[in-house]
Amino acid sequence: MTSPQQHSGPQQHSGPQQHSGSQRSSERRVVITGLGVASPIGIGAEAFWDALMAGQSGIAPIAAFDASTLPASIGGELPPHKITDYVPRTYRKSVKLMSRDIAIALVAAHEACKDARLPTKCMIDRKVLEGDTIDPTRFGANIGAGLICPDLDELGAAFITAADEDKNFDLNRWGSEGMSNLTPLWLLKFLPNMLACHVTIVHDAQAFSNTITCAEASSHLAIGEAFRNIARGAMDVCICGGAECKTNPMGVARSALKNRLVTSSDVSPEEACRPFATDHADPSMGGTIASEGGGLVILESLEHAQNRGARIYAELSGFGAACNTQSWSTPDPTGAPLVLAIQNAIKDAQISAADIDLVGTFGCGVVEQDKAEMAALNSVFAGDKSSQTGRPGRSAIAIKGAVGNNGAGSGALDFCATVLALYNNTIPPSSNTEPHGETMPFAFATDQPIDARVQNAVSVAYALGGGQNAALIIKRYSEQQA
Image (cartoon, rainbow, N blue to C red):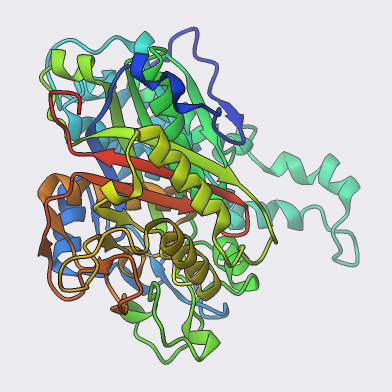
């Protein structure tokens, strides 16, 4: 499939445009019509939800490479699949130019469009859907991406040819000989904006196309910016979210050097990542798990969704972001920047904290991060909503015990889980999440799903050490504006 002439690839930048809530009354309503999930516990929204409900884990010994010499050797990897099943036949030659991150984004994009029954060019070409395609000039993309790991075997072989007589790397030889041992298109596999580039070409999305590289906050910022663009009428549809693979030598090594991974060998893989757990006396027992995956969601203006008879999961009603870096390695223990992001989102949605029934937590398992997040959630929600029994009247979800942390795509998986919980009136169990005491502003489902009719939910995300924080408010859809 050839790309349109005006396709020059997406623009990369560091964060979303800021927006005040004062103009919301004149803006279009934005709804969620498709969820595209590529996760260690399932590909596709249905498989992902079924696995969450069953309490399944996607954490196991890493199979993609020999991780036995690294501090951590377990991770979350996608189930077996073929990338060629997610792109048109005419585009399959381009697969050789795709990193793992790009391939994951294309899987999630295909699943999102299929779930939304959105007739993009890819869906028509692959005969997944029939009929006319949507207007590509009103279809955009915002995709979060991370630092893509190059093919180390390929890169290493080129490095060897740049060694001097003493086997030391010689920069002059690298320029004159080593680089020539890489394919001329080598760099196109590893640029962060190539996720959005391939997705927009395959699905023929010709409106705004942006890449956001803000680590674990990327997906929420990408979804938030898409929300803004649709609300103000710049596009009608956007595919947005994020994807990243951290189950590679560089991804695992970097996270281990920052002391963020579970390194204990005395814990089973499925019990290793324990969000908000209270018994992390042994530092090696606290931490997150490197994983791969991502989620892309379809946002549409309400009018566009109604005109094509789309199924509507929920309405996206508010977005807030904040940035405050205390340290590259540890968060603000008060959670102040996350508090600001949540408060901005609540204000944008024109509701109050007491209206939030469900919290989609980030809950990565890193002790300092979890404590800061809990401090933020207590600051926003504590004391405003309790049942007559004294237990929290608000529910919460934490999924990283089952899927790990895959960086730029992790927030999108959290967002999808929160949307599905609201849509299905059910809170799935949160793997390895310890029950909390009376001071907590919410309660997790631990062993079994619980029924809960959610009217408003908030999904939060933050970059580990990066200072970026974001929150999205999801509202139960009603044809009439509340």
